[in-house]
Image 1 (cartoon, helix red, strand yellow):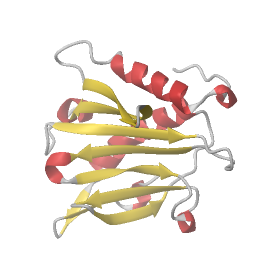
Image 2: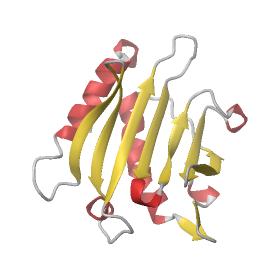
Image 3: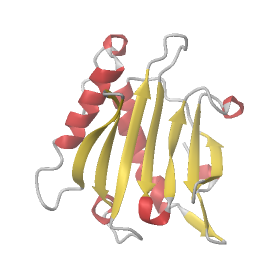
Length: 168
């Protein structure tokens, strides 16, 4: 369980540091689920956290790729009443990226949507549940649900999708 401090006291740099540390503590052995953790930077500023994941170990079953990348970015825009984030599972070998985006894009789907990109094209975008809680709690919930999403991933005519009923 993660202690949920007052999120009003968080800033992007602090939250990214906490996420980095949370993931980094899980890289301690050769059979760890997480192989490597690093910051994504732009102009010297931390803009996200990335982690290399041992996909079969993470899913506790065989999987189409050996490694995937977890990509997390956050923002606390002062002119919005909610936090922005992207939590994405990326498989470079298959050119597959899927995950949740809580931001101001695609407002016809609400504050949060689930998206699958395949071969540099968006192939699915669905309304996702808006989670108005501490960002670390949101991360935990999305990571728990990622297992369900990956288990329900379907390939129809070589195009990935997730049944709408599985998107939360």
